[in-house]
Amino acid sequence: MLRRALAPWFARRVILDPLQARGGATLVVCAGFVSLVSAQTAQLIYPTMDLNNDGAVSEIDVFAFLALSQLGNPMADLNFDGVIDVHDDVIAGASYTSEWPVPPGFTVHWSVTGERDPRVSPVDLQGVEMARDVEVIYQPNVPLYPTDGYHRMIRSPLGTYDNWAESYNSYMIQYLEQIRQEVRVRSSLQSPGRIGILDFESATPDWDFVGINQPVLVSRWENAVSQINEPALDQAFMLFTGFTPRDDATSWGTLSEPERQQYLELSWNAFGRDLFTWTLEVAREEAPAALWGFWGFPLAMVNVPVSDWDRRLNDNLSWLIEQVDVLCPAFYDSPHVEEDDGDSACPSADPETLVNWCVGNMAEALRVRHAYNQEARLLPYIWYHYGPNTCMGNDQPGRMISDTNAQVLLTVPKFMGADGVLLWGHFYPTEPAPEHASTDQVQRFVDQWSWLINSLHRQRGQRILGTSELP
Ligand SMILES: [Ca+2]
Ligand SMILES: [Ca+2]
Image (cartoon, rainbow, N blue to C red; front, top):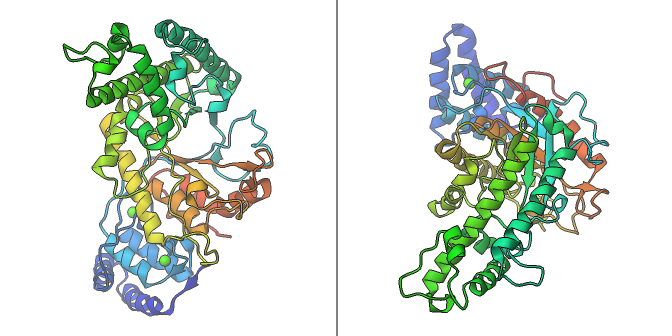
């Protein structure tokens, strides 16, 4: 049970007494409630106020909220700040009549990871409505994946680029065979509806993104492309990449700097597109009944609302979004909220910032799905511990996400229209790093949040969240 602030208790009594006197005068009570709270506030509209899970905040939700808040039920803590008080009343009132794209169903998936992975066995998910139906193929599972750059795909064994086309063909044959074998050994992917995730986090097939995040790959590519186009521009390479030089250009050295940049971008993206498209095609050949996606696509952004500048990165990848069955942006870098302010080493955000981040990135994911692939399932990745960019460090071993982060990351995606979430995390001691979680910690996380996970795992419009028994 949550601590309850005193002031709103009296406010609620004022609301509830007329309710009891008037019996079914629903709308009158709602109007009174809304005017009461709207006098105090700005527009704080939260998806969490859709308590009966039907996509609209109606009087049913208002009554549910009043009842839940009187009980001190955590579902009435609409803004996840650990206390049910007037701020939640304000949000409840402001959210009245708002509408949310709640999906027909919602599933939480254990993605830590497949049946053959020893990490799955120690954690008991019995009684938790979490599907173990995900297989992840990681970069290290496919040693030929060009983690260090696409130059590797077109380089001869001697380290030259003279026969780049021959080198590329040879590379792709061997690389795709590794993909094929990795899919084959994951036999569960033969069952319809299983989820196959290709987790290739290096060498993203977009020049803009790589330029921002992996500049060393940019310089390697420039070295390769310049060699291929000296002493003369390579006609076959230009044809493959779609680059058209100006009439009097004869070699890399005769191209202007903007022309070189255009050539580098076009060529990187052409090889990236070919690589990822073939990867998906071969994976589908081997496991046609599975649902396939690439980890982290579409991209989640650091800043919200997502800017046009950042949106272009996802638009650049529209060709990839169009091909997958599952969209799984990674919500790992969400702001983190410390309930007790106990650790000054970690900058702590307030719950509103965290909710806004989640809402903003869900809005971007929905935009991408609407624009490029309306059939795709939207399953953001969340994790149970903080990552390197959200204050994980050797001085904080096994630092699990806060209660606020857990509630927001599990809840907000659903009410913003996700079809589910994928839960992932590092494990200690299988991956022996001090900051990784132990089996006991992960078990405690699952046990602590099973009531919330089970309440999410429902069909749209079913009973009010949070009225079931709580721990
Ligand atoms: Ca509702
Ligand atoms: Ca609250």
